[in-house]
Length: 132
Image 1: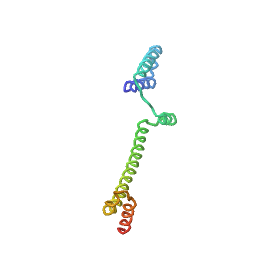
Image 2: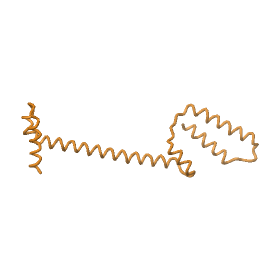
Image 3: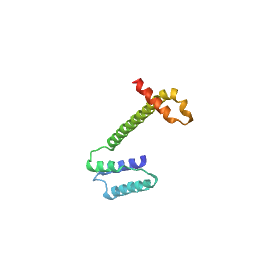
């Protein structure tokens, strides 16, 4: 991947620094050689470029792809934090429900083991109401 980027950079530099004194044929040959090296490297390099990055480069020539990558990573981090916070909220909710059930289930839980599940749940609800 690094070779491909370096080859592209060198091709860009050759185009930008075109020297008219050199024979055109040798410059074209050098350019073709670099394109051939790039074509050969293409088969060994498997890189997926997001379509959004290409569109952004097409729309704004001065846009830096690293800025796009940084913004994408920041969005991913924000989404990750949001999902992590939701998971933490769900965990706390589960613990709260377990504590709520466990508070009533401690006294009524022994009697509900034989199949009378309503007594344990009712005891938990009654305890929760008296706690508040």
